[in-house]
Image (cartoon, rainbow, N blue to C red; front, side):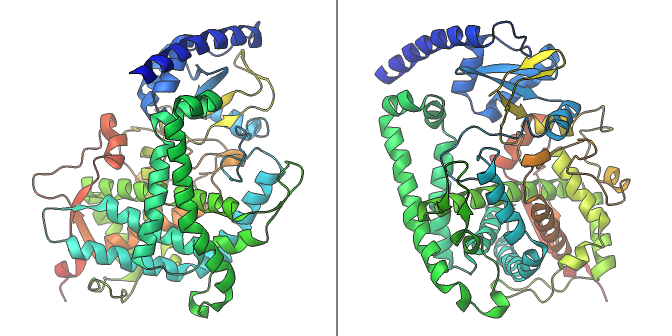
Length: 509
């Protein structure tokens, strides 16, 4: 109770100070409209950005496509219009490509400058290079074996809570791509444990306060700050031995399983001096980079995979059409392998290129249910004028990705799951937004997710193989609710349950 009393008084004083600063900072400038200063800060400090989203949707009808919320001493502007997003991210990309200052090496959070370019170029030219992706084919096959085994072990029953299996499979793949070798399940679970504990803490209310007011927040929530430091230490204790082991044994792996691991690319990486980060990465820096690699490639892919399968269960006629396309390319499936046994046959990357409807299904799900409803916030590097409003230098910009994918001025019947809408593009839909942003599940412009092509490959690969091997349906008495009211919680809190049966049981000679 005493802590809350201190926090409330602190916030009241902070708001008065902030208001004075803002009056000086924004004097004579017309910011985009939004709620009052006090209400803005209350929303920002007591809610995560996902919890603010329903409120922002209501604000859109009141204030328009640009909404200002004040967070601490700076305005944050929310963009919920695709044409404005195109203007900001493509036409004026350099001005809107920055991030808030970060003291750790990180592609997502690094300022727009030399360090960011080196880190991004390293990931794109090494791990995400087409040759490297091809060398990962055995990784995808091994992870598919793990996923099929886990589904086979639980297919007899009322239903399968698939998100746990999807999360485990995607995390296994991230670990192999990061460290370049298979790890036993115990070691993988250790990594997952420290990663999950840290991620949950970073998204907690207390960390939100600490992040907003670093100096005072560490005093007010000293125990929580120490808990955060302990979680960082736990992560380093698990990951550093794996990094050191990979550095020593990188060349000893069997040729058939030798890949360009992410850690390999970090060892000799030289950061430029311009940003004050010159020199090689330390082991702790590598832990930070591995942390980003895991977080960026696991939850987003697993949740997107669940949304796709949920829609295919909800719409069996689409599942059947997709299955018909798959067997027209690769033929009827073999029996599902027993748990722990490598699949007799899999749909490979070359096969996927011959399946346009599969790609349409994936794109439609990304439009309807993007991996995140907001991309990582951008920061304006110099003052600009937009629609008669002033956006000051240093302003944080948030892009409401989910809203753009449901814009009725761009998409006919946007709430409908209709993959056929993407067949009209003949497999050449501009997901990068260079010609115009219609949806942006991976962001757009200079800070677009560098692994978007890898994500699309993984989604197509696993969807194709899961539909090829099994027919998916809901358990008796259960329905998949994809209504707008709960579309976010379905993926995160109320996972899809499904029954599966081997396709071969329905195939006659």
